[in-house]
Image (tube, rainbow, N blue to C red; front, side, top):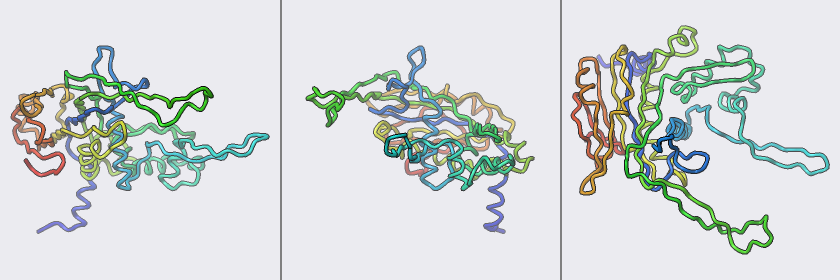
Length: 329
C-alpha cells in the first residue's frame, strides 16, 4: 500500500537516525571568494589561502532567504532619524541589531517583553539557518546557545598555481575633499587568478536531543537535510556579486552513515590538479577508508562538473551527478 501524503510528511518530521559527512568544493576564477580586511584572499601564516566557514554559509543563507525561509543571522538595514541640537533631522541607514532582526523575522513586538525562554527557543528553531548552523543568542533576559547539527571546517585552496592579481580601477569621480583634484580617483580590485577551496562538513542530528526533550524542536529532520544539501551544492553559483562572480560550486560529496560511525574531516584527503591537456582532476583520497566501511555506509553521492573535471578514485555504492543539472552521470 502506498503511503499517504500525511504519512510521508510525518516521516519527514522524524529526527534523522544517521550521520552525514562530506566535502564541498568552490571554484574561484578571477574572483575573491573570501577577502581579509586588507582586501586580499584570506591566508594563514604559511601563506596557504583558505575560505572561512562563514564565507560558505553566507550564500547558503542568502539562497534560503530568497526562497522565503526564515533566516535570522543575516545583515539587514533600517533607517533612523537622528536629531541633533541646532540642526535639521538627518536620516541614517544602519544595520539592525540582533533584537531588531529577531522581532522582524518572528513578528514580535518587543523581545524585552518575552520572559519565556522556551518560546524564544521554539522561534529560533523555526529559522532554517539556526536549525542547521546553530546560534549564539545573547540578548538581555534571553542568553541562549544552540550548537548546530551542521558543522563546516575552514576550506583550504588545493590548487598550487594560485596567485593574487591586483587590478587598478578608474573611478568616474574626482575626490571632492580636495579642491585641487583634477583627475578622477583610482581604486583597486584584488582577485585570485584561480583557486579551488574544499570544505569538510559533518551533520550530527543527535546534538538536538536535549532540545527535543524540552519540546522546543522536533529535531534535525530529513527535510532540514534536503534543504541544506540543495543549497550547499549550488548557492555559490547562484550568488553573483562583483567580488563573487567567477565563484561557483564545483564539487559536493555526501556520505550517509549509521549514527554511530565517526569519520575525520574528509576534505584533507581531497587533492586538486590542473591538466593542461585535458580536464581538471579531483583525486578522491578517501577510497580506502570509505570502502573499508562499506557495511556501515548507507549511500554515497557526488555532485561535480563533468564538463571541466575528472574524478579519480573508485568509491563503492557511489552515485555521480551533474552539479548543475542534478542529472545522474
